[in-house]
Length: 302
View: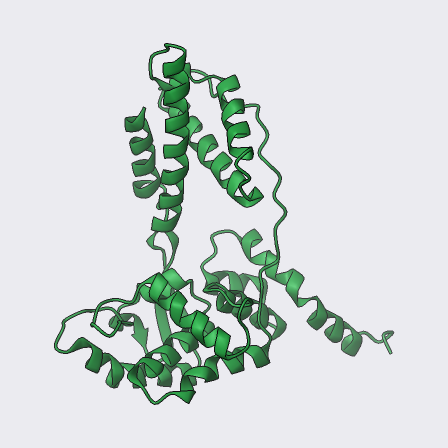
């Protein structure tokens, strides 16, 4: 049974192009399912094969998850992982009947992402300026680039030096499934990044041939956890603690672009969303801007 799980995870990575984070989440979810299934089948003396795991077993498993008080979003993800897995097994004739075929998915309301105001963004980006250190120069470049491009944090830390063209003010990001996109950045951001490359980065490397754009004090590629700790500290100093996560600047970028008049399709391309429905969530955050535009433009609004 574990072998089937591994086959499915490999399928997600190779054929579906799932990101490392998504694959890791699915792996954790399906290992949990596999453990439950093997214990259940062994207890009743059945052969340990997925074809013996029935619809009733699935319902018991979903109840087992629910009793552990997972968040609704976590339950929905675990449900989706199971649903995809059993569909894969049926497609490959490993099972004849999909035990989840007539089981509804839990309904999850789309929560609006937290965003910062323009003043809050300015305050956050200004925090590294208080320090005269190489780390602060790097941090300024990272925060500027994240807000300028709307990249995911995973895309930011995976950048290499050659992915940023500071002369033409563009950055090459690699999104989910390795899909490449070129994103423009504003001149001040390009300046911040080039300042870091010419100074602090060279000092961190110490003749190391690391290609990563953003590195730690030892000259190795900065990690997601490392970036998160840096961001938390600056958010605290800017009195924004509790309001800022590694994804907040991406959400703020999208909302501010729409408020500034960018069309939804362009924002979709900049963010690297495969489906425009994912981008549409940001339109809900722009209602105040639309109200002002309407009041200013409609001849009967005065």
